[in-house]
Image 1: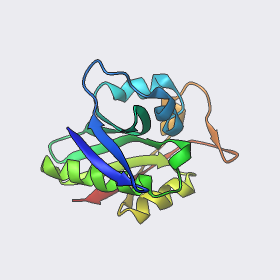
Image 2: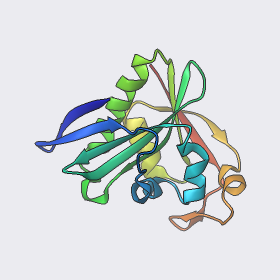
Image 3: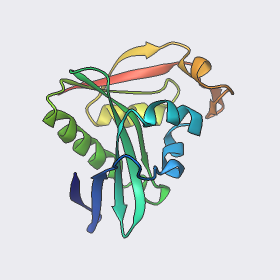
Image 4: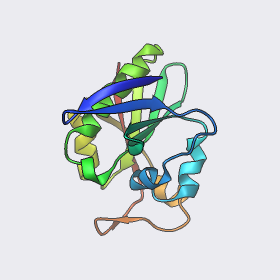
Length: 161
C-alpha cells in the first residue's frame, strides 16, 4: 500500500512497511518511552511510515484487537513537522485504512496527565471511555515522568466508525 499525501504543498508517501523493513525507532521513541515497550507491540502491528525524499517524517502502528476493534498503538511525527496539522492528516488516513477493513471502533491510549495528547485526540473525533489503571507502573521498569508528574494510568479514547 502506498499513497501520496500533499502536506504543506509537498508530496509525501504514506506506505505500509513490509516484514523485514527497518522500523523508525527514533520516531517511535517520541511517542513511547523505551525500545523494549515498543517491541512488545511493534511486531504484531501494521506499521505505516510517511516519507519524503527517503526521510521518514512520521510513523503509526495499528494493532487489530478483534474483528471490530483496532488500536492505534503509536503515532509520532518528526519534530520539524509537529504543530502543522500532520497528526490530524494521519488520523484521517488511519480512519480511512481502518474503515476499509470493516472495523467498527478505533481506540487509542495515552497518559492520564498528557493533556495536550488527550486534547489532540478529542479534536480529531475520539472520546474518553475508560482507564487502564497502573498501566505505566506495570509495563515499564523505570518510572516515567512527564511535565513533572509520574505516569501511572492510561486514559483510553475511542472513535466509532
